[in-house]
Image (cartoon, rainbow over all chains, first blue to last red; front, side, top):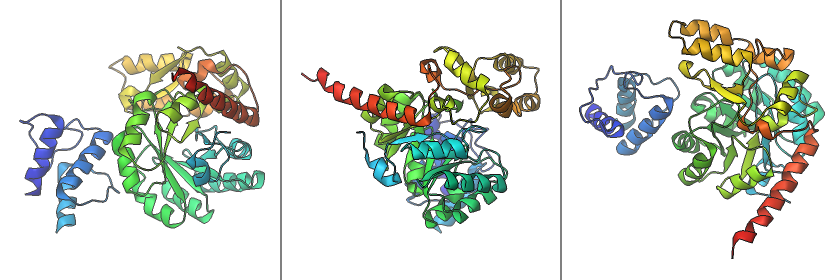
Length: 73
Length: 315
């Protein structure tokens, strides 16, 4: 249920409750630039009380969800 | 005497860093700044590891004081550059154009102090968490690649967001600016444009003359459409570039190609038809060419005078 929580955080972040988000949604499609991505990933990390490596390029919401799932497993 | 915790942290006399400017900040400038009591910084721009190693050796031969290297994270040679910094035991690394996460652990383990340049509180917090020694919060008044935020609102918000030292950059050109930055909560400053006109700076004389002639309104932003806005002097090149950029029929790759080499041409050839003369908004305040030592001593004296004078308003 990581995805659901991530979607909720994302909707609050963008203040758009009807925002369509899937695992395949890219940050670009969601109109989030690299600074938004950093903010958002940190919010997500805080929500799950964990941290993920932001070494590689995070492209999609699925990338974040997968890393969070791995971190809390 | 201006002394802040940054001086002890970086082992420098004055809390003044010289920004890493591509094609401009070489070993000679960095060593001159370090010898004058600031922290000189070599820009590794898009160069390869051999170029950087030579510059580091040259700087070491010119100064026994600490100096730093700026790493442009989009550099295709960045992995090898990262290793050279470790091999050469460079004491301070500043980073720009990306997220240094990948190298932070390696550098920190090697005893290198890592100071990312950040344009927002989010990246500042992220940097702190990754182990950064300090951050340079840079406002969009600066020359070169810029963020959206201005220095005045950025610095106090970054200072509130992190507990590591904050260095202010963007729009600082004299002691008044340094004093203001310290009042906003920064413990040091990074200046780029002011050092462009230093005698020790290896750029074409035309570049220095353009800075001296510049007025407050003589810089402009280009490259917004490419996602990497750049502040530079208004020249034939920048005006043509902006015109092409605003024309919806210009493909992005043509724009990228148009800008290729423009920094080098400005710095080495001084050609305003093809060169991009990066400069910050304080260019209009710079009226004379000086040695690096004169610049740093003047900045320190001015800062002291301004800070002492501030109490006149407290009744």
